[in-house]
Image (cartoon, rainbow, N blue to C red; front, side):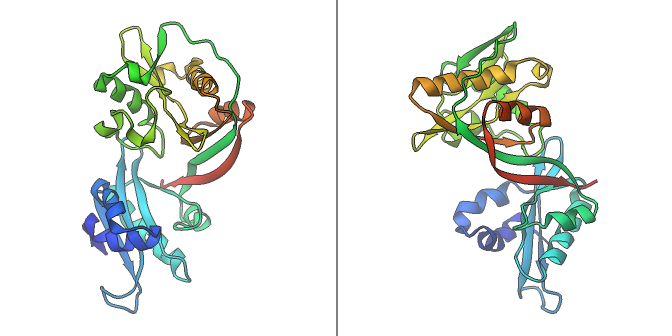
Length: 272
């Protein structure tokens, strides 16, 4: 059953175990919504699942929500995914088995196209030379919001990422420290890469670096990561975690060679 995205909020609150007020943003970013009901109950009876479609610039839409655990979860999840797919075309889901069953989605024609991962370990010491024509600056030293947005948009073609909200360019957005974070500028002063980091409980928490496609064949990603690691060490930080969405196998291999290890992984399954 298709509903306005705001109509998903009661079910999303149950799925995620959070107040509706904390999840209102989910409904706001979705373009369509779907509810699955028990077959033997009329609308207004038992809800088996809820899904919203959150647009992704290059990958259709993410399926937000999922199906409640129980004997009807698989049927509900598949019906919700199919309804969303018919409405918006390409869709993908973070399928950790809690809200979306990965094996059944694969059997239904979805395929694994990436993963969310969290890596952790000691702050690496590996150094990478910066490619010519690029400079690294602390994010705090580059207050131009458009330049920051240029750097943040380097993530947009990666599966699992969404269109950048202008608020993401503000100091403190996402809890990140603009004095420890780094931005890469090309010779024209455009933002071509970024690596944001925050201090939490004495440890570093950072997002995997974003790099413009024109610079991904260079060592810029490694230089951003190495630069942020050096700034963490200067603060006396010895451990960190790295969150990534849609990193390539080569990028994962690079990070594992730094001594980091995967502590959490959720496959991203896409239709078509």
